[in-house]
Length: 318
Length: 247
Image (tube, rainbow over all chains, first blue to last red; front, side, top):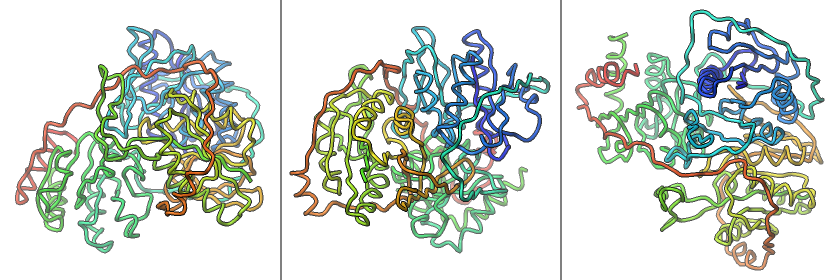
């Protein structure tokens, strides 16, 4: 049985969890088994609705103390849930939660782990799965040798497939929750904005914008496209934009459908954070900017002239 | 207080990525090896800062790899580690690496074990969490700030959709990322003293292979950029709408 971990933030199910559900359902079809979901903690809405994503059952350990990410506690609970339900493949989305708990779950279950997965397995000789390596510059085919397998899929690598109807059976699991050693002092969540790692479109800007006072047009373009905003490292280091917007090798790695880079030269460290984007558009006045080599579309021009026109033209087709 | 900092050797960020032997091995011809940036800039430098505040702190470095890791571990000693252990194994499976480090940590009893958030070659973000499970220690991942007051740590960490600050008691394992510390360059005194600091080589314990890397491939090459003249922005919008179908 394939068990998909359904991550949520303050009760809201993450987009990446829906991707994991779709992946897990496809994996179960390939293996000729069933796919079920697992929720730890409390969620808003009706868990039975998750049946629309193709799963038969949703197991839930409905204890509010599980809403805090304590790797030691969640590992014990998830591992026991996997054992009790007879799960052989456990699917996570490779987000911050999975980075914290999936490797521990794998160790506890004596399972192999492959994280950053970008494909369904090839079953022709064992169980071989592809993952992203070298910060998106290559792929590796990895053979999993263990009976139980933990798979953590790259966000934005799989499309979500949802049916109009479908009802999952919700089954409450009575699993004891060990005491946590982690005390949460404060939580600071970005609300009302598209989270960068989940955004389908990202508008990003660099030093070519000349100063923080010029970000109005970046934000307007992002708003027009329902996109998230990002920036290059020098921009975050100069304090023009907050650090949580920094995409690149040392910042956040993203893989949106569309990445629009404004006034960013495209240093290799920046590319390492964005090269998994499906379509890259570069707007830069320097025709020699290395970013053009990695782009799908480009305009050699002044961002201050091009961006307002771009906003205007996009509005026309909406 | 004893801190263990886990160090991995990775190709420099700007290295050309290529494979050899029928795409089964990384082609290291002409590659410059560095300390994995997350291990160096965030985990190791933060450990050094803790030592600068409290001279009782001992920084032990550990790496799992062959003799070709020695220059990288010497550089980490030059930055400010006190002593180092290299587990003589070239296995690249995360579980194997975590098991080797946990085996050393079980006898040495560290108060704090630090890793980078991931390596820039295999990008698995796994070793720190695995060590914590093997030792049954608490684990805090993706830390951006770490402060210590006696044996109570206050840590800010990235979580889905934001960040939070948590408090917990040593011992623990943490994975570190941007925000923890600023990059440093080793000074001449550090480089000279690194030559005489102990670097112990130990043989690996036997660990079952849970996963094996079979081969590598490169992503399909991009078709090349389609340039649109700056006075034809409408054409770019048309291409994104009709051809790429992304807006």
